[in-house]
Length: 429
Image (cartoon, one colour):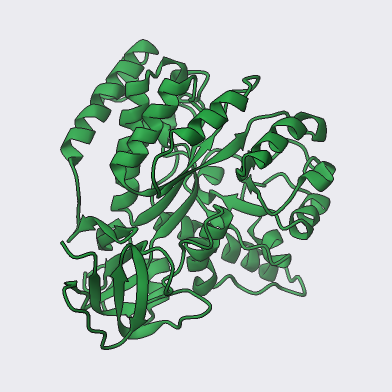
């Protein structure tokens, strides 16, 4: 089979600084990379995909998700922490982690997500880590395994061992800091992660001022998650030190954590990535996250306007928020040089979105259509590393087999946790 694919005749949103968007153009893929984006391309021996009446764009980048929680999707009424590492999580065996991670990643592919940053905080030993990595490999999506040892566990040997078991791209490892959020608490393990060349992901501390207190420990290799409790000094430290921010707006609102600080980030020209966090209480697609982010910022703007405040900020645009979900998200994940935009030399991680469906036609503005109007039903093709993971609206691979594994794992874990009546049957709790 040829390594070349020609996606012909779509509206192409490259979202890159060097390559313009096109009302009608072709995308040539070869050896897993974007080779050229322009109208009227020809390529001998290429598989040709007719992209008429579609929008072709970079795949979405999910910058923070606990994928192992996929067994308990939409179970928010059971309480936010019911499926946490210390409750239901302790009943997972490696086969349950594999099943949860696989079905979660297949669901991400079906939603047009081509990169998932997986905060894996159930790594009790190498068997759990290997099960997670195997699910990553079997799903085929680009992943970052954020190895997040439970508080008090020493990450040294496990981190090094996980690196050796990674296998080929498109998978990589980062360090998920569960250390006490103080300069003294993070110094040792953050230093180890840096020695290993790993990016550092960390939830922010519970109190304002804790981020700025880290001082020189902050850097461009750090991604802070949520950030709803940061004060002005913290935000200034994030900006001045080049720290990245991952927001999960739907989960943050649903969990009672409060609205994400979108306007405060905008005021400092901090461009966040977007993520799902936890499908127990949040939708698992980036269309919902984009709409939540832009709606929250617009609501805060109009609150200020109705209150008669002067010096109103600019409204967040669809051009901004689609970048949060793609090119900015890739930078937040530490993958900005690889993915996030459709430019020659980048990895061919992209989606083809149907623009002829009644939920979106007629198209007036392609970017506005993606942000405000589309949903997972519009996802038609998904490519990662130039490989089609979804064709004509159908995910490649044994989806039914993965679903069976997930249902069985859900029942095992719920039964072990004494919650069988509350999960898996559809019966009202």
